[in-house]
Length: 153
Image (cartoon, rainbow, N blue to C red; front, side):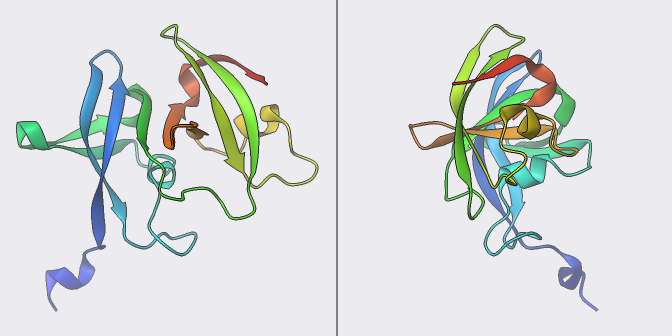
């Protein structure tokens, strides 16, 4: 049996990472061509909220692959490609970050009727990262451990 049979088909998706203490890192991450949770491509949010501690980042300009610890990634930014959950609602919020930055945007998710507060979403499951949708069509995937406080707008 060919080793190709066991490979999971993936594609590169360009991202901009903000890594502590390195700063801004440009590269690509590898997402599954078919998500395990819905039809279509896996989203960076799904990739970064998996249990693995490290993520592969292709640094094309350096010609190398690096394995970054998810806990050192403050946030990553990428272009929205219809990554919202079906039936999702938008919730405007501000996130005050440890590095002094202020992130504002919309959290888009399918909230159960009794769990429609920002507080509920921030405490949702084991997710380390939350996607924050920007008006520019970009998504900032925020590491929750770097948020000092959040507030609804």
